[in-house]
Length: 135
Image (cartoon, rainbow, N blue to C red):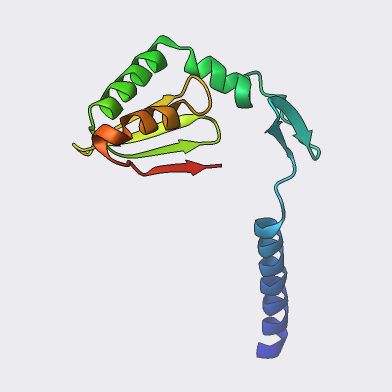
């Protein structure tokens, strides 16, 4: 009697485990993906195309807001005043500056390479600041 119950239970557990592993490991292809500033459908997603901009267009829009411009001016100021411990930048041009007082400032740089130019200009006065780029 015990073997009759065990075999179906084990079979169900194996099937559930295989399905779970397949779901977890299979690529997520049914989605909208931002490629070269355009939304591209991958797979057979039923979701509507995102209405917002993506990629470089979105970055340029974010860089031109008044809030971002103020933060960028602050980043320029603290780099020039040697108040920076480290700088990181991602592929969307978002710059994160870690300050000596343990605070951080985030802003989109107006143009690619602006943060490296600021760091190089301040290097003689302040010494080398670690800059990491995540692409």
